Image: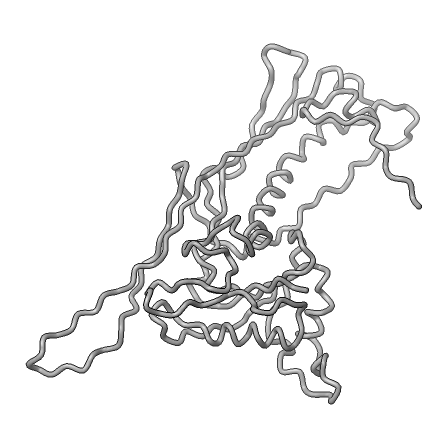
Length: 317
């Protein structure tokens, strides 16, 4: 059994001093290298952006869909139809800050010129925060931690229509399980059977499967195989090349998977609301002049789900 890594000293206060980066001053090392710091950018395409100057943000929807024309003669009064008012959603915009300060002694004493390069981690820290925010609607989408505009979980089996006289609808699989040809067809049917706010047919095209790395093989079988994977009679696979496969590394569970539909401008159900996009500036401590070099990060944003009409979720096996 391999031995676990040992951390000799680790500070969590953001001041880059000699104990924090002791490897830079250890003469026993012939070479010191910067570790790779790359952030996979994956969640942004699922979101529309909004900008606000307030500490809260609210968005709602209206509809132009009316009931069918009513039989009416010239002598009858013309029946008046009323458009449906959609759901609304509001969020509070939270601010996030962090910073790193370098001491004068650390700069003077370092053998390898990496102290200043270590400050470059702030932008990637902001990007990681952004990606985890994007992923939160998926990672918490099956419970009531985050609610959509209709007051339900992001993925739910009983969602109210804007017109209360219309039956509820669902964007959650009734039978949780790994991706198979059968469960994919169930998702495909769910999109084909979608209706609008008045209950009129409004089918969508299943355009994308979003899944954790653990399900990559299952998804590839469905979308890439020329023959149906679970069929022993060599039946043709009708779903080969049917949708885009998107591996999502920011998902915290290895079992749930998601399907995205295409509904035009109404795709904008997942929103990233920015009050302050990541900004950086120098910082110092006037009470301690030996803290000579520093950078700070400030950002303010929140994600919200106005609706999930173009999404379908399966909790997985």
